[in-house]
Length: 281
Image 1 (cartoon, helix red, strand yellow):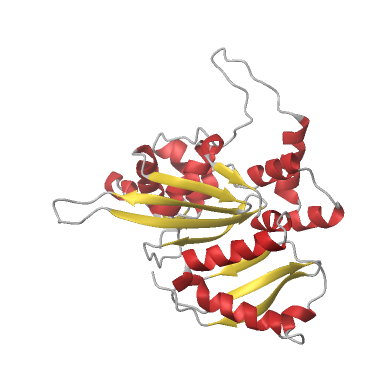
Image 2 (cartoon, rainbow, N blue to C red; image 1 turned 120 degrees about the horizontal axis):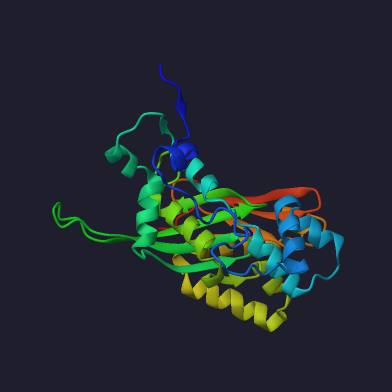
């Protein structure tokens, strides 16, 4: 049986394709001047690649916002081959037609056709929409898919897409959004983790934030919000007994699985609630 391999590993040799954005720090050629990176960016790259952001927060009582922004910026994968590796696996011999059907190549075409929009990075979470063109021949309408990507230390840790892909490899929509972030990083709206924003709010602002969030997405978050409120109002509940100061919150939703909400402590991520997800698509 022929051994299977990651098809992207030989793209530059077998198909003449290259990854021009796999190293953003490479010196410019063709007479263009290379501007050295700042010490802040050099340091942020090393931290983003090797140190969990939680440890950085625990080590320093106050981190300047520009420093946080650069660490968050450089935490996303920087090499397109990493994206290809997790989206395409094929035998060493493949026809041109099959090659063009690989999720990575389909994602590249979507990106080239400007199908990626509404890209936003909040902390270590990237979201956006990818428009799949319709097929008039088969009377298939245009579809807009919502994609979200979580990452940590230059590795993608979780992906979701409304296309309903059940394959072990990433769909072309995840590929398109990932490549957009790599190739057009400077045009992506960047925000600090939401936990940092919440820490800057006073009591009245936090109340208003919660009320508007529930009002805007009541069908999706109301069951979770009610369960959180019940937990918080019970003095002996698990959430009120957890030690430490929680600077980052994670909410995981799935249309097929119960939701779960967790909080970070110095000892790691602690799951402190679970319930039934009644959210619609």
